[in-house]
Length: 308
Image (cartoon, rainbow, N blue to C red; front, side, top):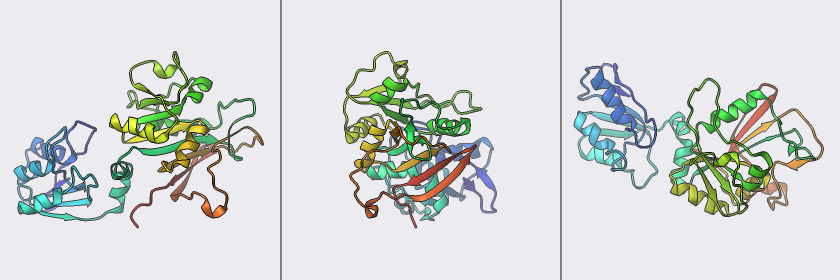
C-alpha cells in the first residue's frame, strides 16, 4: 500500500502468483492508473522488498525509480537470495525500516517456513472418527465427515501448490485430488503427487499432465522432487502409512484433523506407530484452533513455532 503524507491511500497491490509482479510494483501501477504522484510517499509492505532479479525485477529498484520516500516492511525476507532489500533502500537514502507485525507473519507463515527450511511446507490432513479411525474394518471410508468439512478441505486444496498421497490410497479410493471449493468457478488446481513404487496407471489422478509419480517411500525424496517443481506448500492426504512416515521424519509443519462425532471401535488408525513410548515424547502442536464445520470439528495445529 502506498500512502501519501496526508494519509491518503495512493495505490494498493498484492502478489497474484509466481511470475506475476510483486506487491510493490502492483501498488505503484495502481497509483499510476489513478493518475497520482507517489514521490515522497510511504510504502507499507508485508514482506521486505526483494533486491534480486528472478522472474521479475527487484522491487527495490521499482520503489527507487518511483521516488518513494519511506518503506515499512512487517516481515524480513528469510530467502538469502532475495533478502537485504531494506539495506539496499537505506543505502539509496530511502527511510526503510522493519516494523514487525504478527498478523503479517501469519499471512506468510507457510511461505516463510518453506523458504527457511529449504523444502515445501507440509500440511498433514485427515478425517477421523472420535476414536481416531479413518476407515471402518471393512475398508469403507466415505464419508467420515459431512459436507461442510469436505467443502473446507477443498478450499485448502485450492490454496496450496500440491497434494500428495500414497499409491495405496490411489488404488483403494481412486481419488480425483482436485480442488472444488464452493462458489469458485475456476479454482487453482494443485499438482497431484503420488508417492510409492506400485503402478497406478489408469487412475483418475493421471487424467492430465498436472501430476507426478515419485518412485520412492522416502518423505525427504518426495519433498525434494516437489521442491524441484517450485512447490512451496503441499497437503499430505494419506493414507495413514504416508502420513505416519512424514510425522516420523519430522517433516510435518501443520496438521488439519477433521473430527466427526462418530465411533467405530475398530478400523484404520489415522496415524500409526511413531516410535514414541512415553507421554513426555508426544508431538504437541502450537497455535491450536478448533473450528466447528457443521457437526464436525476441524483441529488445526502448527509444529513450527512462530514469533512470540
